[in-house]
Length: 106
Image 1: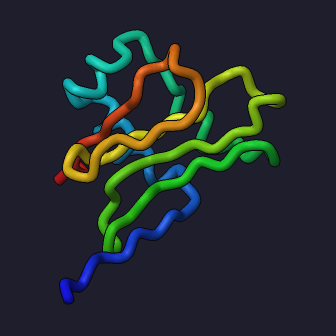
Image 2: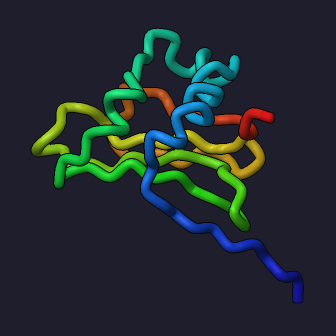
């Protein structure tokens, strides 16, 4: 039997800002939504009860980001950014492209 890694979701914090900005600068992320502006610095500081912003980690290594919202409270889709090796994850409106991240900055 092959042992598999463990994926953990944790709350995104302001300490994740460099990583999220790095992922946002990757060509495949820009190509998926060239006009996207998340405002990471301000959004990471907000914690409304109807939204979760999570970083996915595989064996402690960041591989993606997911935002879960109550669509009744926020007029955005639920989306995800993830490492291309693991493939995209997305939920929500089809009018918003899937975001895909890249590896963490070195």
